[in-house]
Length: 344
Image (tube, rainbow, N blue to C red; front, side):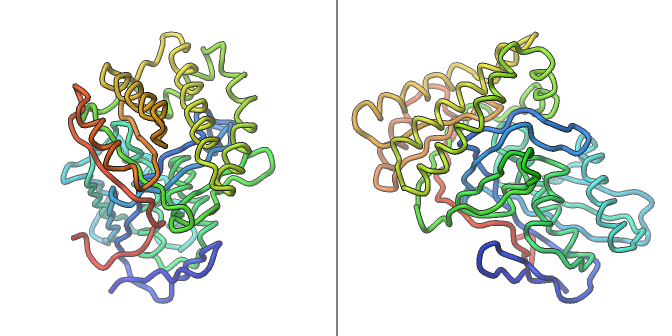
């Protein structure tokens, strides 16, 4: 038996109705337009800066959580392989839910994706959002989407945003709001995203370690934190006004500033490869030629081109010609996390 999440109007409060010991959830990765890099409080995983993102449709993570009295420890697998690297964060999230539900059982956690993980495509965001939803579903914990976002954030800051679909904001932690919240639905401004995969290899430094390293060693880090609030408000206003040109400008600027902080860390964090740079130049040329498109790049070498739907084919064709692009994904803006009936 499986729970169904009943999504209501914004702020979308899923309610779980009956008890079962297993559940499956699906979440989509989100791409930050105003970037998140740095933690104000490491222990509580509270971001140092506000962020604003779009949730994708075509990429997904599905996670099944099944509590089993026969287990003596949590059993975690990702895409069919045991994953010790994520086990501590997975167990920490499970422990939070077990304490709340008064349950001491360990769980099988089986997660699969339709895109490469650990490569700069927000697999942690979708993975931990799906894990949080599946766990509260399995334990029949009464929870709304705001609480679910806070739960997911404890494991991955960006996972808080994947709880919601469309355009999602996560205001600065200074105002006490450390959960994400929906800003605009996917259908209210249906942008398109073309993702250029330039490497399938896991990135050499994970985001959490990279953020800590930048905060400790980059001379630019303080200026990055100081300017993030202005970028956030500019992007937020642009989205509400459907102002693509302004959103393009602030999104690219936020992206380049974040990577400047990474590259100015000591030793530097350089996530890009040659194809990353060629894709960036290609997208900039398209916009100079009047095609409404802009780029953004997370911690990794993959380039995401955001454009108006009528221009998606042109952007796709241009990126397809870039040497070093291994695969292209095309995505609409997508929904938030939801309970599924199966892993298929």
